[in-house]
Image (tube, rainbow, N blue to C red):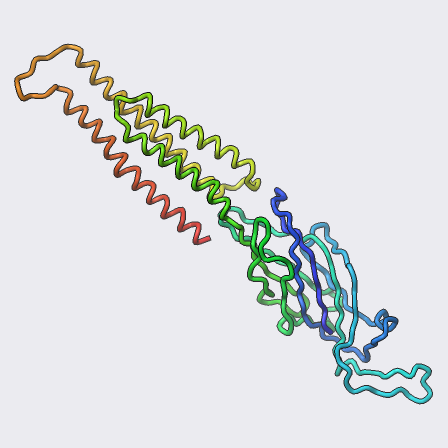
Length: 330
């Protein structure tokens, strides 16, 4: 006996971020000892059909839309006896296939792991099992059937991929596995690209002349405030979860670098101003000898050059390698 189950699922997380209705049809074969199969509508109502339970349902119940019964073969027909009132042919159930098609609609639950957001891949299951009373005489054999996804593969926020039966399905239970791959193009363009541009602007302030403190301070503070406002607004639209996500680590790192750039600006300016205060008295030096503060100012400039040309780029490269390796790993 073939049983086709079509289910409508709303996959969603705690924030109701996903609003979609993928359809999954899971064909499988149920083996049972039947003595005869009917082709008329009144006979179909008398056919015994095993009960099935959809396990991971939201609310615990699925709505049965319709049920159809049909005989797909007509082998070894037996003629009725001459004394029979109904002159119908009898087809043995052992040599003929009786197909029962049942359509369900329901909302299934799926636990989302959002650590790799927005590069996450959600793995979901639709679980079906037999009641304990039917396990002794009904056998589910998914290897004789197939699972089909009937909905659009590209959804609003996800693409549906790798729809299949899970390993170990069969006997008294069947599980359908599918993956939801987040469509990350718009998120990358609207989050990572602007943050990288702001980091480049902050890095460019390190090349401004040291005596232009107002320009350096204004540009550095503005980039930090813009990035923080951007991250704050973005956080409201992200899935609500208490765990840290990769996108949070990305923004925390860039905010830290912008803050470090501001500290460097302040440190260099204070050093230069302090040295200038000590030189209020004019000192006469022999010809060919520079000011006494030349060496100290040079140390301050070397610190700026070392930070903007070596330290900052190396930190960014190391973080980028670790971050994107983690993304591809997940």
